[in-house]
Structure formats: structure tokens, C-alpha cells
Image 1 (cartoon, rainbow, N blue to C red):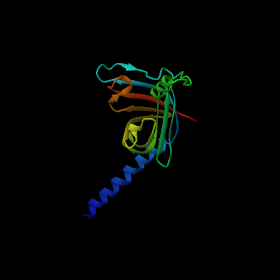
Image 2 (cartoon, one colour):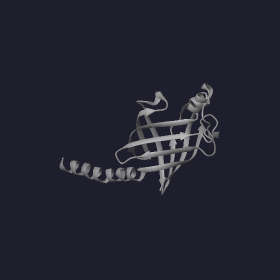
Image 3 (cartoon, rainbow, N blue to C red):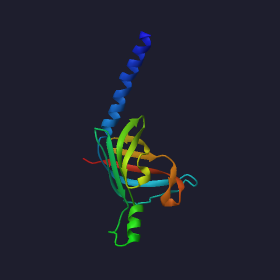
Image 4 (cartoon, rainbow, N blue to C red):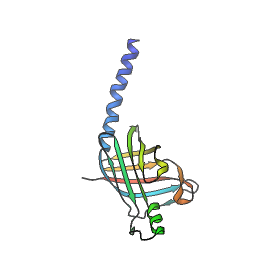
Length: 159
């Protein structure tokens, strides 16, 4: 029994520093460089917010993340139709995040889209120096009539 407990203790001792290191590497401010979606049915890719989307993501050491993404060349809304368009050309949410291997999970507590509140948003990630590559899971995209797609985002660390 003592050997089993010792083995489990060693496993935890070697596992958690790696997770903590990944979290430390994510902590900071990230600027959005590209945002594309890939459709599951055709492998086609589109840049729904244009070739030069705007956005920032923030990860705190305390475990909160927040992100806002907007399409390039948005105009100040003047009409109801403009306001509806503004809603479909942005993404914004925040929540508490945890890292699990090569992905993080955000427990969303505030969002531009009320349907996301209370959900877990999973994002796969790869860090390469000051470059963060993020891939979302396959899901229906309301912006594209419910077609199943996943997002590909590239962020650069703000220094």
C-alpha cells in the first residue's frame, strides 16, 4: 500500500508542475492575428471576420480568461439592422478556465451570446514562443445556417 501511495505522490509531483507551467505560459494578453472556420462537410475554410479581424484574449494567473473578437471594418450601428449585423460580427465571453493537457476549458459566466452562459467552452491549443494557435471543437455555427464547423485562431503575445 505504501508503494502505491508513493507512486501516486510521484505521479502528482511530476504532473502538476507541467500543468502549472502551461498555465503560466498562457498568462498575459494576446492579440488576434487570424480567425478562420473550417466546414466539416466540405473542408472549405472561410475568414468570417475578414482577413484582418480585431481582438484580444486575456488569461490571468488567478484563472480567469476573457476574449473579444470583432470583424474588420465594422461601422457604428445606426439602425436596427446595423445593430443585428454588429451582433453577428463579434464574439465576446469570459469565465474561469482550467488547463487539461493540450486544451483549456472555460466555464462561461458572461457572454455576448446568452446561450453560452453556464456552458463549458473547450479550446485546443499549441504554444510556440509568443504564438498561440487555438482550435475549437466541431459545432454548428449559427452564422452559417447551422453548418458544422470548427475555428482556427492564431494569437500573438502582447509585450
